[in-house]
Length: 507
Ligand code: TRP
Image 1 (cartoon, protein in one colour):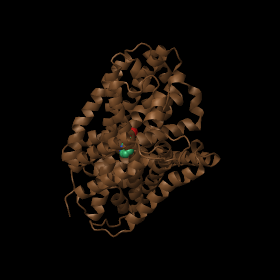
Image 2: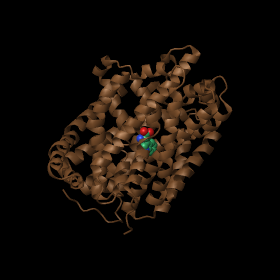
Image 3: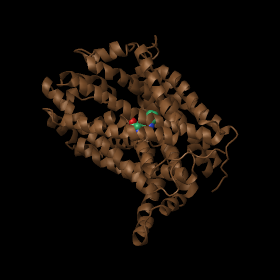
Image 4: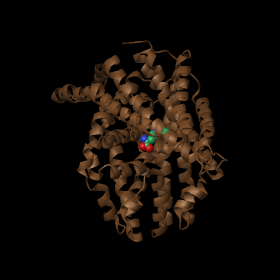
C-alpha cells in the first residue's frame, strides 16, 4: 500500500481549504444574493445558515476525512458499504460537471484580463460580451455551430495550470502553490477594495448593499438563498473537505480548523461585497443612473458591469487587469481541490499512480470543458449549473448529515473531535457537553430539515415552469441527464472491486 500523502503544516491545509472555499462564488455571487435578499438584513439568515448548516457540515466533513484517513467514497464505505456511491457521486458531478464550466468561466476571465489592457469592449461591453466574445446563438440550446477558439485556448491553458499544480502532489504541489496564491489573493483583494472605497459615489453603492430590508426575512426564498450560498461557497457536499482533511497530521484540531475556514470564507465574501458595490456606486454616479439599473449578478456583473466601470475609471486598465487576475487565482485555487478529491478517491480504491490519474483527469476534463466553449456554451452552462447546484450539492448534504447522524452515530465523530481539542478541565467539559452537543443536534435535525425544505421548494418551482424558459429538451438532456449520467458512473465505480485496502464495515 502506498503511504498516504500529508500536508507539511496545518497552515498549508488551512490555506488550501480556504483556497477551495474562496472562489468566484464569493466575489460575484454573494454580493448580489445579499443585495437581492434584503441587503444588511440578509446577514441574519446568512449567519443562521452558517451556524446551523455551514460550520456543522464542514466540521462533519473534516472530522470524517480525518478520522477515517480516507477520501469521500472510502469514508462513506467505512460507515456502510451501501453508501460508497454517495462519495463517488459527489466527486464525479463536481469534477465532471461543475468544474468543466467553472474552468470555462476562468478562461473568460483570462481573456478579459488582456481585454482590460486594451479596452477591447469599446463603448458597449454588453454587445461585445454576448455577441462578439461568446457569439451566443440566439436560437438557443441546440444551436451549437462551432467552437469559440479564444475560449478554447484559454481553457487549455487553465487545465494545464491545474495539471501542473496537482501533479506535484499534496505537499509539493498544492501546498506549495496555495502558499503563493493565497497571500497574493488577499493582497489583491485588499488593494481592489481600498481602491474602490475611495471612488466618488462608493458610499451610494454601499448604502444599497447594506441597507436592511427586514420584510424580506419572512420570505422562505431568502432563507433558501442563504443556505444555498453557504453550501456552494464553503465547498460543502463536494467531497473536497473530506479529502483535504484526510491528509492532516493525527493531532490536528478539527474544531478550530472548521471555525477558521468557515469564518474566513464568510469574512471574505462580506468584504468583497463592499468592493463590488463601491464600484457599482461609482459607475451609477458617473452615468447618472440608479444602482438598481447597474447592478447585476454573476456573469453580467463581471463581464458587463465591471468592464463598463473599468472604462470609466482612471487607470481602469490596471484595475481591470488586477480584478480578472484575482478571479483567476480564486478560481484555480478552487478547481485544484476537486481534482485532488477525485484523485484521492481513485488512489484509495484502485491504488493507481497519482500522476497517471491526474493526467487522465486533466485530459478528459479539457475535452469535457469544450462542451461549454461553443456558441451555445452560455445556455449549457446556465442549465447544468442550476441543476447540479440546486440538487447535487444539497442532496449530498442531506444524505451525508442523515448517514452520519443516524447510521454512524455522531457521537463517534464527536469523540474524535473532542480528543484533539487541546483543552482541559472545565473548558473541555463545556465544549464536550454543550457546544458539540449542539453540533450533533444540527447534524441530526436542523441541517437535514432545512436542506429538505429548500430542495422540495426548488422541485415545486421546477415543475411549475421550465427553468429560465429553456426548451424542455435542453432541461432534460443537460440538467436531468447530467445528474443521471454522473449517478450511473458513480454506481459503476462503487461496484468495482477494491484493490486498495478495503474498509471493513463498522457500525
Ligand atoms: N467554493 C467555490 C466558490 O465559492 C466553488 C468551488 C469550490 C468549486 N471548489 C470547486 C467550483 C471546484 C468548481 C470546482 O466559488
